[in-house]
Length: 294
Image (cartoon, rainbow, N blue to C red; front, side, top):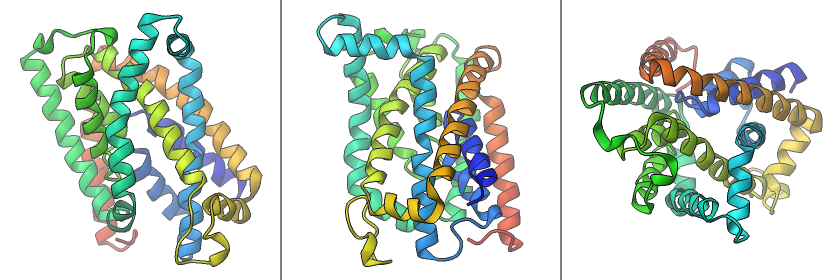
């Protein structure tokens, strides 16, 4: 992997991770256009591990931007901040469904859903869902009362957590499901976005850690060991590519998060719905034309 390719993949990861457009879908398209992960099963496994590990940059971005909230939760877990403890519990409750379902369904998802057509379908359906949610909020502006983050209940957090599981379907977007979920259970837009980002830190950290200790099955016995996925990625791309990808993801994610919070307060989610539908139709047409493999 050329450092420029690693930079571009990190840039795409950072920009799309917290926007409701699906980082996984965009990375699949970008990897295909660059010829990364297309040479065979071993190349694909290395590319998948790289895509997961550069999420570390997106995690660092949110931890930095929301450092006060993160420190508040740490103090809460140390018994020094009641509100911090409450928020930490709400984040944990929201994470639990993904932790359980992810372990159970991970192999099936990777085998069945990591193709271009499932991603295209998720883009279009997710776009329609955004537009439907925006229309519903417009007709019911006071629905749910616009609760603040610390007004959440554990039932609200659990509902968002189950909706986050839908995003295990590549192309759906974790941030889409958690932001929309927050709005549907009655959070204000700002609270829904903040909860989505904080929940993402825990979810992405778990996903990255899991992939780091991943065993590669059915490719080469040398990688069918703990940390086999990391070993394969390291040997395929080297440390420079990973470092460049993580730095690019950190900077671009920080900028994207700051922009998104400001934009949503003024304009709402609708533009992302139209973008997803348009992108799904374009990539679908290119797939039918043979530019992308199904």
